[in-house]
Amino acid sequence: MSAEKTLSALIDRGWMLATAESCTGGMIAAAITDIAGSSAGFDRGFVTYSNNAKAEMLGVPMPLIEVHGAVSEEVARAMADGALVRSDAQIAVAVTGIAGPGGSDHKPEGRVCFGLAVSHSATHVETVEFGPLGRAEVRRRTVEHALSLVHEAASR
Image (cartoon, rainbow, N blue to C red; front, side):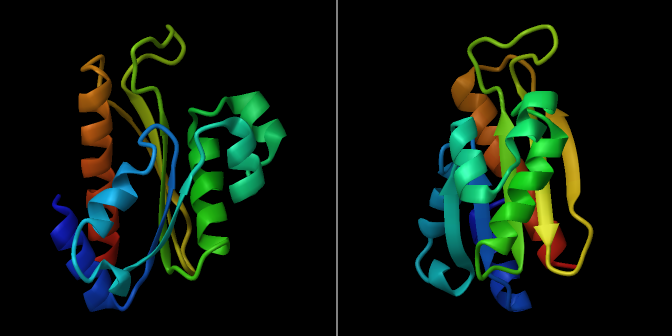
């Protein structure tokens, strides 16, 4: 999904977007704000790479991170919910994953957890296994998937 189509859907819906990014380091926000006029559909982005940043900036409980790990649907949900509450947005997307290199048997390279929070709706979470495609490609596909999730929600 292109950032242009996603931004257009947000603007058409009258929604503002907030992002909560770990493994992409702000790439989703950058994709949207690369577009002229993006201020009509983008509120803010949180780059929460460390666990402390997730807790301090988004209110993710440290016990949740300790029990489930930063790369988990539970943490992705808390990140998305935290971004929605701490912004003026109607929709927030969160990503946390292992872009690589590395990973483990329990949490392999290319695993990314997504959270999508929409005002007055249940927060959606999902995990995508992109596989060991290399850091740049996992991050690129993560941005693309996040934009698709936002576009689909804004187009309903």
